[in-house]
Length: 229
Image (tube, rainbow, N blue to C red; front, side, top):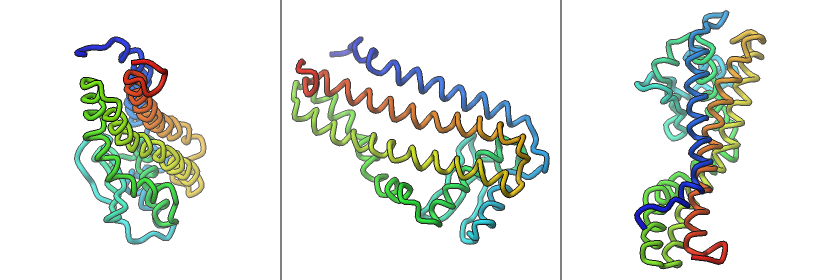
């Protein structure tokens, strides 16, 4: 089985959603990167303000290379902001920076889903690296047992992505509310923050759907669901 058109039928919706979500992220970030906030606060300053108001003084904010490579590392308590976010005073930069600050606040407040996601990282990496391959080999060998083993491993990726959804949504929810509450942006400027963060959230939904559709394809093709091979 070198090529299976049915595979495309399964994964096409997820692929289309992923491409659309990626386009929305880039489009909204580009648009609102050109809109300067009224107060002129940079992304780094906005993140620092949210940490300060949350009484968090042990998180280090650093500048990193790359575009939209922003993230929060709960292991070393580092909030890393890309160059286009760290130094920019745009609405887009403030949205991204405060979203990452939202993760730091989750960590400080012992937000349950964030802890669960961190615990799932090792198993998700294993599932991502070998789960797909094991399922594929299982199909070639017509071994439902091998496909099932691969599916279990690959399911760890899906579980990680599902747990990631509330973590990302909650971080965005915190950022959207706090940037206005603490006067980082004006109420009328929140629409831009909402658009940037909502687009980013959609990428996580698309990733989970794509993984689910891929998993369903292998289970169906092997006869583990649907009653056929």
